[in-house]
Amino acid sequence: MRDRILDAVERLLVAGGADAIRLDAVAAEAGVSKGGLLHHFRSKQALIEGVLRRLVDRFEAELPPEGSPPGTFTRIWLDATIPEDDVPARGQGDRVAVALLAGLSGGPEVLAVLRRYYETWQARLAGDGLDPATATLVRLAVDGWWMARLLDLAPPADGLHRRVRARLAAMTEEVA
Image (cartoon, rainbow, N blue to C red; front, side):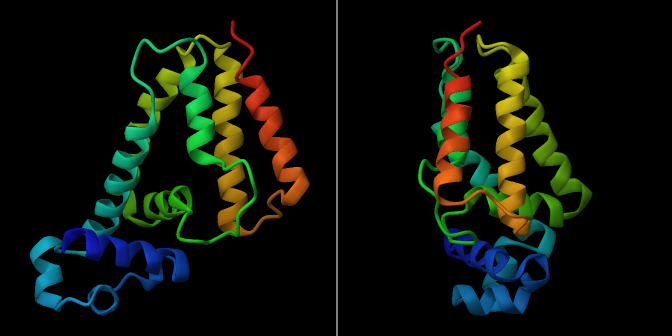
């Protein structure tokens, strides 16, 4: 039931942002009673934090282990966050967008959780065997790409999407 509830929260976040996350709306979307929802999540903040933690766990499962060859962490970071082909914005596949929405809308406690993950990821990127500035530039480009998609701030589409992603991928091949 917990996953069904979190799936519902993700759908509502993508469709309507944080304002769409109301306990009654989540219960209806998940097809559970409000009591069943409250058994697993006591508040809107707990729902949003639950979504964030689940998405981060899934993302971290895609990342390579410590001691991987140089540039591997940065390449997999890029592969796990920006698809090679442009896909419609706001689709259920936008895990990164949902995570960003959750981090931004869950209040300071949820944002603090996301910040701690980012500190760990940034340290791994900086120690990945690439020039740390290059690895960080890839991360910042990924974050900017997702923010552009999330807020519909003229995200690169079609051919430009592929060219930008290819340029970022080429940067991950420049081992220090």
